[in-house]
Image 1: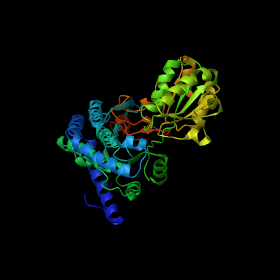
Image 2: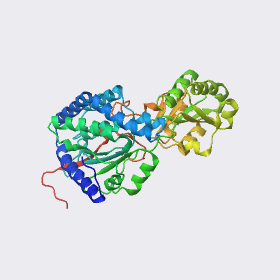
Image 3: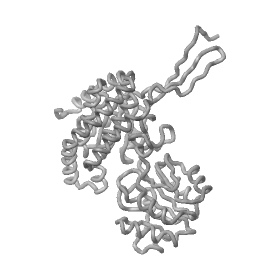
Image 4: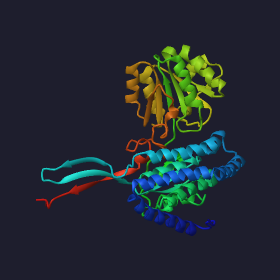
Length: 425
């Protein structure tokens, strides 16, 4: 694709992408489930066949990222290897195995006048997806939009430009092999940031925008978009260790929630411990974290128990580190933990470790987050782990879709009304 040299050239290119997506969306909305399944399976096969080319493209992105001194967390999000390419392919196969979300009858009833009314699912249309860093989103988002009968316009991060282009091409080949329009999945072919602003104004072509990235990206999209936004906000995720927690279980969960992968949105950023057990529970939990290379930023109670911790600032309680750093605080029971989570969290994913059923149920009910867990790591905040095959992101808003956004969440509905000649008096 030739370089886009001017704003006019870029705008014309973006409108061309939008028009092609609109045409493709019309065809995708009518595509039988089996054709979409074939496209997904062909895309998975193509990812495997192109693994070497994808990894070569990723190596180019990584080399550029290292020259730009990107953080270790960002490099981890950007990096692909054979296992991650296989995970992308397997994800497309899992999405292919899901029931077709289009055409499902959600409800049906008959009015006293004889009108038969049904509510059925339909595709959203053209979905614009703007994301940073992680090139696997290219396959996940393209595949999920495909399964739900939509067209997707993907604008990946500039740091993953080459990787995303190689992955998108594999998905497009899969579409073509199944007899569906390749333009149902398009990648914006430029790193120019002006393309993002243009996407947000293309109401003639794009029906919904999904931003996935840091706070600055989300806020910009919410501020500038002229179409509905499904927002994936940052993951300021908490683990609360209750007085009724099993200590060994808590140690495993906290260590995994923070350190399994520090650069993912489901990584824990704050640990809260009930004051009633802090003196007994915190030392071994913090020892595990220190040994794994995690910096502890604690309140006064934590510092009194852990000489290696550093003082936590007010900003630490609402920071998404995406790094081996954890804010740790001592709270007076579950009520204080819930208040802290709802005040400082981002409504993404939060967990309680406890063996007390009533305490667990209170936490699950009162924490205002898209995902709330009992006795499990926050790193399960993932559409694949929820059985969705993949996800576009974790929606943190109150309106649906909320939580992992998979194929089933990428549809709307309409009403089909069947009459026998009724007219309204």
